[in-house]
Figure 1 (tube, rainbow, N blue to C red):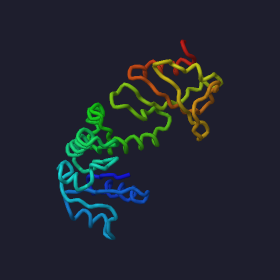
Figure 2 (cartoon, rainbow, N blue to C red):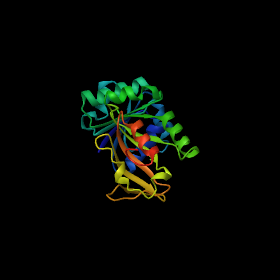
Figure 3 (cartoon, helix red, strand yellow):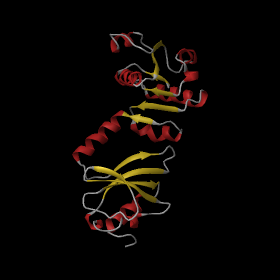
Figure 4 (cartoon, one colour):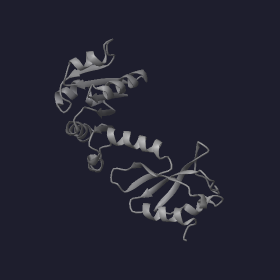
Length: 221
């Protein structure tokens, strides 16, 4: 697979190395030609392109026409989103992601169909997971905000009860759980145990109802 990466900083250079090690071809774009020597003092096995990632000639030099993926990971939110939109809308690159620093923009960009990585948001989330492992988390939200994958700790009142009772039809569905540190897909006739951590797919307006069902101890109570 040919991948175009815009931004030769710590993220862009690390991502480039990983992709090259995995056998992909990589074109790395940065407006500062010195960035390549700084990040790759022993040389770079991919294609180096000096210029702005939203410049059509620069993208052409990087092989955007044959790219199957593009990552915009510069230090500027606006630049990253512009590059991502050009790649997706003009060149129909199948897999595109943009790094952003302002997590407040993430939902807006996702609604434009641009997957984002919010560095501060991710780091904060990882810290909270370790500080408060029992609290709930949202794992993933689709581009429209209409579907989420959420993590919930199974209340002790559900221990010994069939988890089929947690089926919310078209509103939520149990898809997997972690038990004793080991993940497993949800299966029929699965019975809850203390310490279970659930992974559920939930429609946009059903999370509160799901939490109420979990807190009640049984469905419909």
